[in-house]
Amino acid sequence: MRTELKKALGEVLKSYRLNRNFSQEGMGPSQTYISNIERGRWSASLDKIEQMSSVLGVHPASIIIAGYLTAEDSKSSEETLERIRIELKEIGL
Image (cartoon, rainbow, N blue to C red; front, side, top):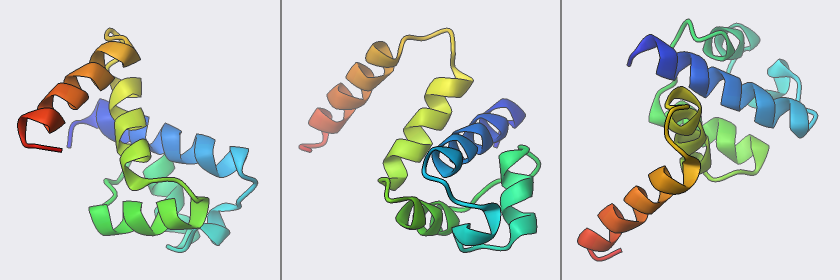
């Protein structure tokens, strides 16, 4: 995973965590793991994203999409979300 995306996903997780008043220790994985994810040092697996999103009460796709939107700040969120809608429609979803 490229560095700017890892950092963006970390920022998103931290934002959700702080907005919902969770400590790093309350997120499920270890505090060290969460700290390294939030600082963009490590990549979170899909399993860990699903675990943390469950604790935070958000859909895992929200974390992933917000990470990409943060990393790709040159594109508008509406443009990216419209592309996702079109690509999902292509496969019947």
